[in-house]
Amino acid sequence: MRRLFAAVMLISMAALAACGDKEDEMVDQEKVESVAAEARASIDKLAALVGSRPQVQDDVMTDCVPGDRESGTMLSYGVKVSITDDALDRLSSEIADSFEGDGWTVKRETYSNRVRFQRGNATIGATIFPGRGFAVVSGSGGCVK
Image (cartoon, rainbow, N blue to C red; front, side):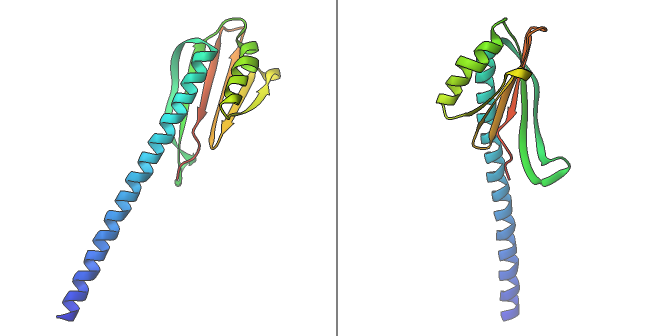
């Protein structure tokens, strides 16, 4: 009888542990989606400030280390916008200053027509293509494990 009880207890504990793993996976997926939604919102905000007529070019969840599913998951999200002639000046001054005021670290790379922003694990940025009349705004919320 004791062996039967021990066997039932072991099976029950294994079942509970398996349920716990699924629950952990669900919590992780919820965290991934939450981080991705916040990153999309930040990128969309930046895109709206940089230009007009946004077109999503990339919206993919990827492995943090390509090919290594256990490395975590991260969003790769990019938007193309139409710009005016003063887009680079506005990006590197008033737009960058606004994001800096919201707690973002700003890295201005005006020599390459790019400004990057980082806050926590999130990294976003905009690259201006003045001769072509568009900008690409993209980024990620960072790796979520």
